[in-house]
Length: 207
Image 1 (tube, rainbow, N blue to C red):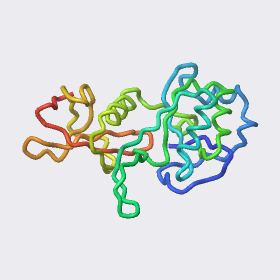
Image 2 (image 1 turned 60 degrees about the vertical axis):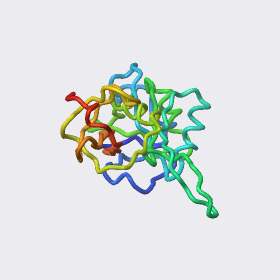
Image 3 (image 1 turned 45 degrees about the vertical axis):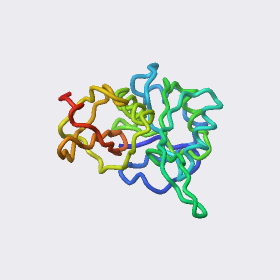
């Protein structure tokens, strides 16, 4: 796995990623980008890797430039000065998602964003897209407002589909099945992160 870097150096984390040689985004040719980008011209989801705590900074810049973004957050309880507050935290710290064609000029514009490390890519050296089904599942999870917890990255297992409730039609891997409850694990395979939510096993059918 690799990624195309922005112009603002390196960041901590992302150990699974191999770094491409850093390039000045203003020097990347449109022709070169079009050759590197898989499925050029199609609207697809991509993962942006940011410096620590810079997700909102990157989001604000790219949103102002008209890009379509998805920054999944979840509600958690935080105690400040002895008082509990419910705040929103990133579901995948250091990452946000962008849906675009990634044509040459737009790609260069993305790489100029302050706080951005790069666009995650695959073995071909160019940006790699994320399946729509993965994004749709994460979006449904965020909208459900159900308690979510991080889970060790999981790629294979008993795949199920939820038939009712706020996660209707969401597919994932069912683990830790006990009596009538289990954990539904959802993953973003491009950067190997998973999260889990408790579900009623009676609502889970083989996918």
